[in-house]
Image (cartoon, rainbow, N blue to C red; front, side):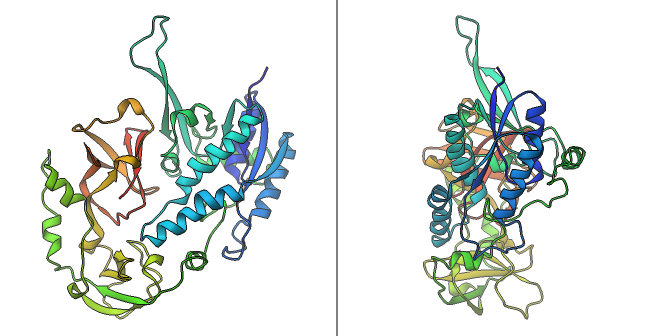
Length: 405
């Protein structure tokens, strides 16, 4: 009997081709469209509204001759993703809803639904791959412990392993990524050959399942505007020299604390440049939305203080306030996709890491301490913000991740 796979049909070309490939490989395929959002008032209506996506997903399912249904996960999405976003921004943090959506919706609520349909696997159109290895001491019957790997997709420009950095072994065990070995042009070619309606469809942008959002309006649903001041910090700020030393490993605890901590500013450290509508609407590295001109170089947000409602800025994308040597992940926020590689207290390891999607991987040294994980990069990183996810890789394998504190 063919194994059953439930595919998350999003109405895009990637999931469409994923479903086609699985059927071609002999799986019993079921398509499900996840409806996770009802409020179109804060989305840009011509940017892939969910109704059009659902309709395209249905047409693809008909073309492939597979069962199809739409399931409403909007209550779970609001509670686990949207409410989380509001709370994070309120605290001056920068959440990544796409990572959370994969962990909490696609590979949790959706996976549970698929298992109730007697599915063996769920599948998505992510550009990543899954590997299997055996680790640990062999058992008397000659079998090792099966461990699953999350591997980067073949298409370097589209690799989406970062978005899956919070998946567990249990979730990976039940997941398939049919297009991971393909490039985007190859996927579109297959879709065109099969005359799928999504073949030339543009990739969706914005929040997972919501679409391209007007973020200030979205946040203002729950976070009220609050006028505060914008301060410009000069490049000569005295705190920068001490934070950019030459790093010689191994580092002591005081050095780890200093290198991973955000810069600390006071109003008197810079010049008053204007006002803003709420520090909780802005994030480190942001340029747009300040509405302040008259400087030789554009102003970038280098720090936000939601308690005092102050935004600190610096001129130019190379301002030293945008750069940090390291970051910290609290113990309860550390996640190892490969538990067998988890560091014990006092251990260190060298990995390549990134703090955002499509950011080039850079070498970093991980220090596991009682209170959490310190990650110190060989080269300073730009715009590290609390609430982002850092992910670390061994070659093309994503082995762990964590929420930046």
